[in-house]
Image (tube, rainbow, N blue to C red):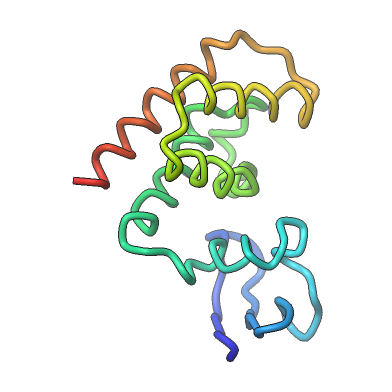
Length: 141
């Protein structure tokens, strides 16, 4: 089975046709977008396979990471709107698994420190996680 999507999955950039085949993701005839996250995450990038709660939480996480967490300061750059989208599925998984606030903060701090090489006060990520937890409660009502 294959699903086809035509448009801009990140909201910006070049318009492309996307297909998800049972065996591998394909972009304009090439394997590509989504492969950096693996095939499983590719379907989340395009919105496939999300239940109703996750389909509400996924874009909220993306916006919170971009506008609130924003460790590299790109919130005011429209071309960088998808800069943190590669981290959305990890945060979504933690929220779905009822991870503690501390576990989610640890995850974001690890991304900043080990993934980006940035040292920031832990409180920055803690504020972000407080908002993410409020979103989890809101969409689960």
